[in-house]
Structure formats: C-alpha cells, structure tokens
Amino acid sequence: EVQLVESGGGLVKPGGSLRLSCAAPGFTFSSYTMNWVRQSPGKGLEWVSSISGSSKYIHFVDSVKGRFTISRDNAKNSLYLEMNSLRAEDTAVYYCARSDSSGSLFFDFWGQGTLVTVSS
Amino acid sequence: DIVMTQSPDSLAVSLGERATINCNSSRSVLYDSNNKNYLAWYQQKPGQPPKLLIYWASTRESGVPDRFSGSGSGTDFTLTISSLQAEDVAVYFCQQCFSTPPTFGGGTKVEIK
Image (cartoon, rainbow over all chains, first blue to last red; front, top):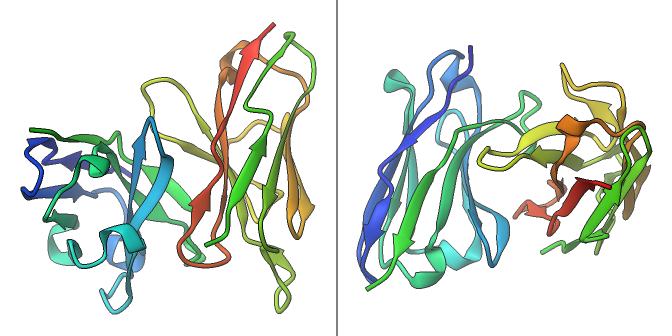
C-alpha cells in the first residue's frame, strides 16, 4: 500500500530554517518523480518543487528558488525539503505528493501534510 | 505561468442532481504530439489531502465512481458529477501540468442544497 508520511513542520521565526521529511514506503520509490505541494488559505494549492527518481531533474517555483532545496534518499525511501530564509508567506500545509507513473506532474498520491507556520 | 480559473467558486446541488464545474486555462494545455490535454481534477474533503479524480482531462483514476466525468480540450474543461451523492461534498480543483510550474485553479466548493 502506498504511504506518504510527512514530518518536520512547526513554528519558525522569519528568516529561520526548517527541514521537512517524507517517508514513502509501499512502492518502488526510486521509479517516481516526487513533489512538494503547499496549501495556504490565501494562496490555495501551490506546487513548490519536484525531483526525478534519479535526482537528475529538479525544479522549483520561482518564489522559493535560492531558499529551498529538495533532495531524496532512494535507499531510505525518503524525500526532503530544506527550507531557509523562511518568510510569512511560506506559511502553509506542505504535502508530499507522488507524480503518476507517466512522469507527468499529475499527483496520484498525497501525504496528510505537515503544517509550517512562519511567525515572530 | 499558466493561470487556471475555475467557476463557480461554489455551488449547491440537490442530492441526485448534476453538478458542473468549469476550468479555463490561460493557454492551451493540449500537447499536439500526443493529442493529450495535461489537465487533472482533484477532490479535497475537509481535513484531508487532495485526491486525484481525473487526468488527461477525461481519464478516471482507478476506483473513482463513474458519476465523475471530465471533458474539454485546449483551454476549456468541465468536471461533471452526474448524480450528486452526500459523500461528494468537497472542494474540487483543476490543475495543469503542460508546463512548469504546474498550477491549480482556485477551487470550487460543492455543497448539498
């Protein structure tokens, strides 16, 4: 059974850092592009970043370029999002989401999400 | 970036009646080489993550009831719930992945009248 379990969210001050993790048992993790998608009341759903199965292809939304880093450890079936220089507008629930097997950025499985709150 | 616009923002439909949600993209999401529309629909119930319902504009995800259908091509798309059930109360989102960044519509809240 596919499972995606996020962790690492919490309250952080503006300018601070946080590292999110996503454990992904139940499928051949290395075969899938993985993503982070966030959701905030003010901005709805927003794709943040994707990383291909081999980590060869990495993409970010413009608003987080230079501040966020995505990585994965296929041996540990885990996905990560390192977030630096956090801003109030980064406040959101962050979901780990799997791209479908075609390789396109449709998201066929989602975790339950982890809340990141950036506030002083 | 491709902007996705959904309408209406919310709608109330009687049980057993049809619900129709529209989604417009600011540019075509039809890829000519494979004739596929890079458009998906998701359902999100309170306290839950989104769930993929339809991809390639009209292909139902495994396990999705056949009362859900998607149609459209290019820039204009529709999600139809043919006979609304109580468990269909949710917010529905469209999403394009024709170009990076993939972008979502603002959502349509479906309620029971």
